[in-house]
Amino acid sequence: MAKVRGAIVVDTERCKGCNLCVVACPTKVIELNDIVNGKGYHPAFPARHEDCTGCMNCATVCPDMCITVYRLKPQK
Amino acid sequence: MSENILTPEEIIKTGELVFKKTKLMTDAELSYCPGCGHGVAHRITMEVIEELGLEEQTIGIAPVGCSVLAYEFMNVDMQEAAHGRAPALATGIKRVYPNKTVFTYQGDGDLAAIGTAETIHACNRGENITIIFINNGIYGMTGGQMAPTTLPGMNSSTSPYGRDVHTMGYPLKITELVAMLPGTSYVTRQAVHKPGLVRKAKKAIKKAFELQMENKGTSFVEIVSNCNSGWKMTPVESNEWLDKNMLDYYPLGDLKG
Image 1 (cartoon, rainbow over the protein chains, first blue to last red):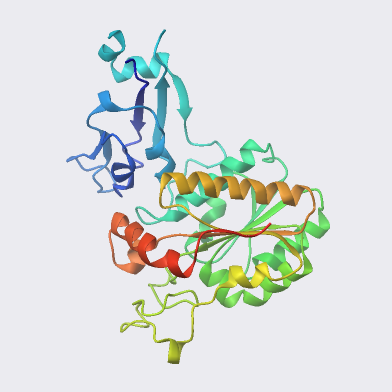
Image 2 (cartoon, chains in turn red, purple):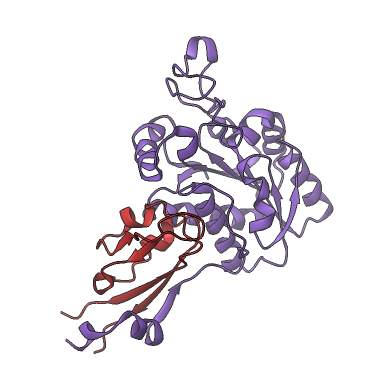
């Protein structure tokens, strides 16, 4: 079955590594990165982007508005 | 199977943009702690104003507290109020400019402690303003002291053995108080710690602004939020703690309207 595909872009410098998007993601796409950003936080990144459905849960709970979400409907 | 080989770059190029930061939030980095509910509350308020097309005619009132710099982040006309006096200032602005949309954005130290009189009287007069009240049960900005909204038994820096209701009193349910007043048109309590609750809270804020445009009286939206720094927890732990403890004392839902 063709599924909806999504992609997220995280503003790494704005992210404060609060982990809320990691918990909110229903398909466990997001993880915190090992690298450290300019503010000293471990920013979130899409570790398994192939599972992303573009549901916007991560962007909805992100307090710092770091996440932009794109969605691609399956082609008929 | 062709969609399985798409890279994120291709999805970004060909797909639909479904979520991006609203342009009514400035590019300034939020001064809040990681995981603080203020960011989400700011964002949904501004998204509602953008969706209703009110960005040119909205005047916001910033409080004193963690969100004292709200005027730096909200890209609409803003005015800073003295501590707790946001509803009084909003009353003045709304009476001079009755066609403007006026809202206050206040924390529990501002609205439920020093500003209790202003809040209750503005609601009782039925001023046509929208009050957004962020309740995290603690004085976050000054170092986690006990607030009127601190739960019974909850630790804070001025109640290190937990709030004892016999000597320190009971938590103030100010939302229930203003719901009893005839001047209020819509009183509700929401939360922003889960995606579904954020969407509900946004709907409630939208209804509050719509009622203000219809001149129905004061609309009051409480948002139960976390304070992970003040509660001495990680952001995820504080949201779980909120879900388990705060919502029993502060049940979610519409109280009026």
